[in-house]
Image (cartoon, rainbow, N blue to C red; front, side, top):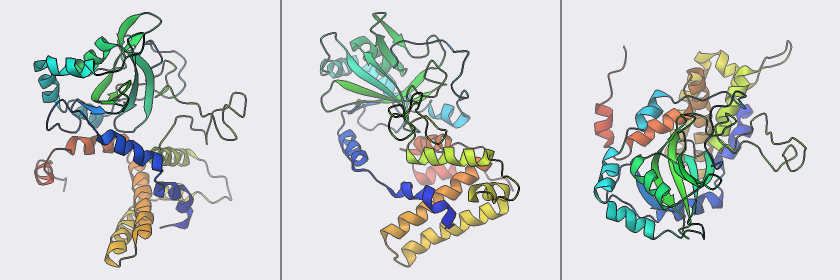
Length: 328
């Protein structure tokens, strides 16, 4: 891979132990359906602002729209919801097992099923959790209004819930779903868009909370995507060399050759038995150059994730056979 890309890619090789712990915790599950499809509404073991807001005239960021692939993903798994509706006693048994606080509430966190972004945090009573499970819309209980509310009922920015997860103490939930638009009343994608730590964070600088011009809490893959998008907008001053990303975006032929080259080197890491570290490094190069190619074509990573999510529970042979023929 090109050495100029290595600093950005190094973080892709990291695998924090906390992230592995989350995966193990969420592996323990109590499922409403014995064989649910990925993307169907299920309840699994482990996990916003308090009230719904209308669109704000002052946007903190450019409004996001739901891409066709994300919309298509939202339609998956209706059978599980129907099964839940046909077996209300199973839902009630699950609700009986939650540990509500002295006000009858549990914490409810909404998370983007494709990007992993934490969208918002609120509270839910028994009725709100039941509504979320049966209606597939993220629903909460407003402590200020003392009433149930479904995210989007005022703004139109609903969160279509794909799965519900409960933590080990059974006092908090995660609603995994697809947002129809900005979740925060400010117009931001999520309610978590200000960084606290670091030299430019809110804890160190008045009015701080920025990180390389990107405030939203992003996982490594999506931070790389955002970095590529910023590189595309950069204006190279006369006499300066453009970044490697900029060069690739301005030379599609070179970009495509790099994607093919890096894919070949990834295969060689196995064929030549170069070891796990080398394989991870080559895969990072494949991811980086592929993301640049996606940016060039206007394709978001979340759309790719939605396609993958729709393939869970489907035979790879059948899925490939069902694709429309490629253009000649």
